[in-house]
Length: 238
Image (cartoon, rainbow, N blue to C red):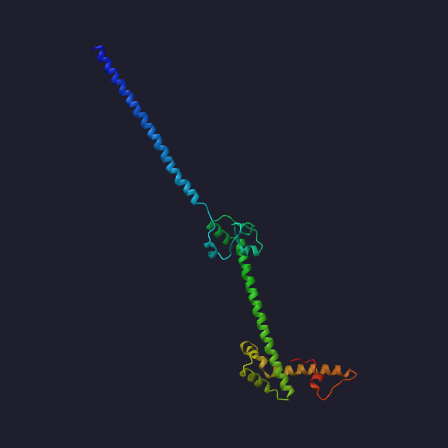
């Protein structure tokens, strides 16, 4: 083989080696670029996912939890726990800012909230009972006054005591609202003749006491327009 032929072969082999080297470098560059691009694509969803997980206050919680309040600064507070002076994140000035459903659930199950709820229910029941009691007492008072006036009328007109019960029934038939409460409660004894007698005996005691006072007075001024009953029994106000 001539020297010229040997040179040509060596040049071709060198050219092939250089071409293969360039191909390898280009391939490595493409792989590096591809890896970087893939990593960037993978990182974007992760960042987006983190942004979506940022908790915020949900207005629908206000309708689900009637004790929940949203503070001006954005925190969550419990009106029941605050009224009962409890000490927990939901009674803090800025409120609780852990905006998660699980946070609300844990607060509902907490001892503080359970105690505050019981105290609130007891307070409402007490207020309702007090209002009802006052109302019933007022109705019963008016009914007793009407019954006493009837007994006084029986004594004033010198009627038989048996007329007391019949007059009570007459008042009811005539629509006396005050006396209707005697029928709706366990106050049947106020309609009995014995109760009428007790009322009249009480009036007699009052009149007797007033007579003793009059006897100790130096003089009494009356004229033809003066009602003797107003002079003799001024203590009776029916």
